[in-house]
Image 1 (tube, rainbow, N blue to C red):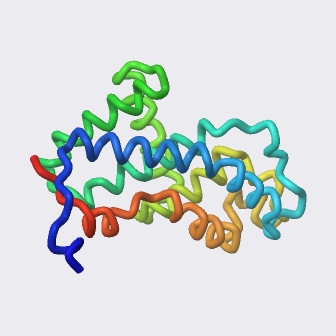
Image 2: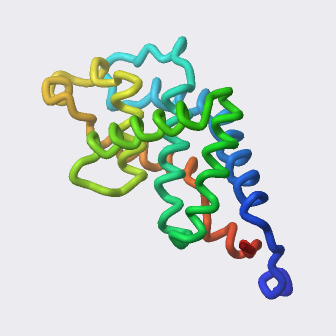
Image 3: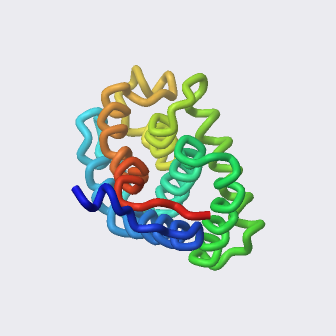
Length: 180
């Protein structure tokens, strides 16, 4: 009870650190499990060949999904301060320049919007991006393969998986207060 009355204050710098470290940690720990789940999904008639697949696409899908969700939790004023910090920290973690990383984010964001059109739900775009970036169409039954569209049952299961990789801002704000 007292913890809800007295929230710990964090600066935008601390918030960016916690966010980036948390997102990178779940990417690092989660990819092998996600890959395993996708390989065993009953929607595929052939087991997807994902053993040699790297986590690059997964990392960018999770990062872009989380960056896209920031707007729903922060004011535009706070985003102007927070986003550059996040971009810099992630670019540094990937040993890229800010410009290179921003280009990757733009490319993935456009791709995710395109495969998810007309929906604007970030979670759905993440699931569809996983399907297309890991070339899972080849492993579906002929009906969905011919449409070059993910089986809706696969997408529903993928949504359940991918929601575990979206930052829970509601839980964060119960414990912390962001100070500008």
